[in-house]
Length: 240
Image (cartoon, rainbow, N blue to C red; front, side, top):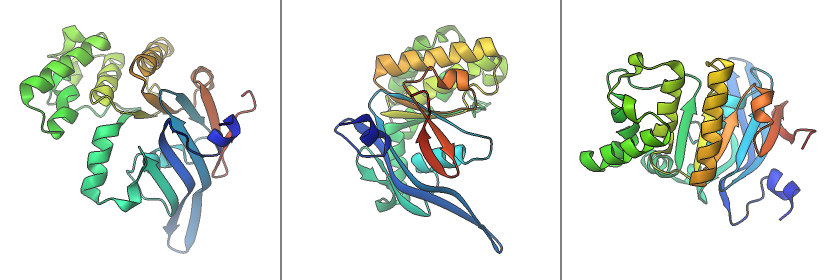
């Protein structure tokens, strides 16, 4: 299959996440704002994709649609071949828990829980027995270099450590795809580079796709593919 076909949203056997003719409009009184229109996208196994664009152009909105956290005004999102719109809210939640991970600019760790407990949380939601979940979570913390911080709460961790815990939490279920919304935007350059390098290494070693929304063109250029969101549509960056 050609690169142009993949960029246009045509799936192949390795497609894990797909958007077709996606649109999102917001109504505020008499004002009708179109944020996204005609977005097509196919994300493949293990690829690293950066989505860039000006602040307020709809990048986070697109990520929420891709994750099934918001419903499109038109079009479809399919995760592992299943259309979110065809599923009940409970089934959508199960699909997300099995196949998606999320990382945000602000870590969203639960402050009253330790790093180990935060990482184990998605496994608890799956009703995995607590001892087994703890063992898997410890292995994931080892993977991100935080095995010695397992019993620390978020307030006792640095910004970079909190983001690494958030990445471990996103990957603990071995998802097909991780959606990351400005995951390094709240970090200094050195820490941002370290966190980004970790995500790219884990994408390779776990065959997990990463869709990264960022305003950082330097980091975006290091992804396998970069698309720009402009006027509600995705277009390939000129350098690619």
